[in-house]
Length: 458
Image 1 (tube, rainbow, N blue to C red):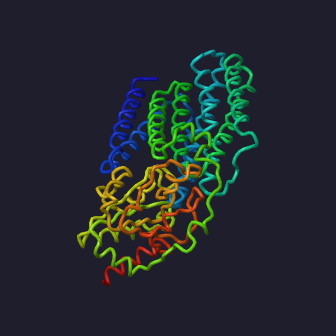
Image 2: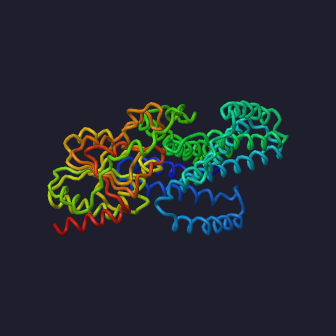
Image 3: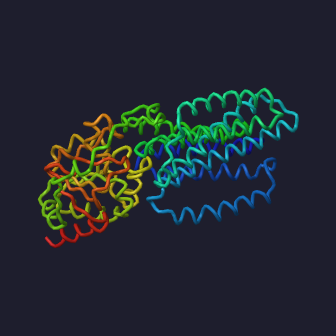
């Protein structure tokens, strides 16, 4: 590797670190993203100009195929499908690392090499990359609610056996690198671990799983960098792996459970789910846009709690207009953002930023909860599990122990939903039947637009 290539990789690494630094604050996040993308462009250009890697016809073919597949995918994806796309990208990253490591390892062995670094890095990449690939595919299926597979009988025992087998196969690859069967068997066992490890995890824990898979894809890339002896791949992979791990830690804290509990599918107990008729029967009170508009006219503070339903309804722009109207009449409007709201880390922040909701109005759960006692109206828009008091009262529920945004302490709670259907965790919400709660049924965007019209007519 010549000095020019090393200099380019160093510049790319500096841009990556600078980009991550700027991503830590909402106001500088866009510039951070641009800086990181520039760093990746530098890394790609430097790599492509290294004649020793691959021939130009293959490079051009790869760029064409990637562009044809990637551009339509990025343009057509809906915001509600973004979690699935991110999970899919994590899987592709893992699969790419596996292919690169296998190719590099095969080349080294065919040339008679016996590099212990290459062998060690290859087994790490193949195992982690395979787990990431199949685990991500299972996560995509669960996020789309198209996959009900919860594992095989005796899942934990089979998974433990697969983990032990992977250790044996890693040893086989290192001790007998000329036999390809060891390597491909390791790929297969890694794939099985990814499937069995992700299948039992419930939907409520899926944001944590996505963050973890993102971290694993980075670790696989870093290990591939050691196999290739590629500096920038090691740095970029390490940054992704470390930042994903930090995010996983934050998400686990938001769920009030350990990563081990999440991986064990230990989201609460396996007790019976309360019947919705028993929870809601005779206690649901509905309202309309005009009545809510009158409440908002006299409110001093309003807290809006967004959830996945906001994304489904594409209501963020209507909510921004509502926020502007209320702020214009002197009402303090705040947003309460739960760490695991939506189906992807930071999902709500991205949606509200897209609609240019002021950053100063977005508060984390721990910051907004102390303010709810002095809140006149709390509006829950498409959120369910993150405001469900069952998390505190039912140790057998799927969200047992998870901290919630305690909207029930507000003077009035308005819940905007299409119906009384349960959230991702699949459990009813007693908040809907509380004495200070009114249900405003309908599509999230249409209801908020009705509210805007009603406020304008008052």
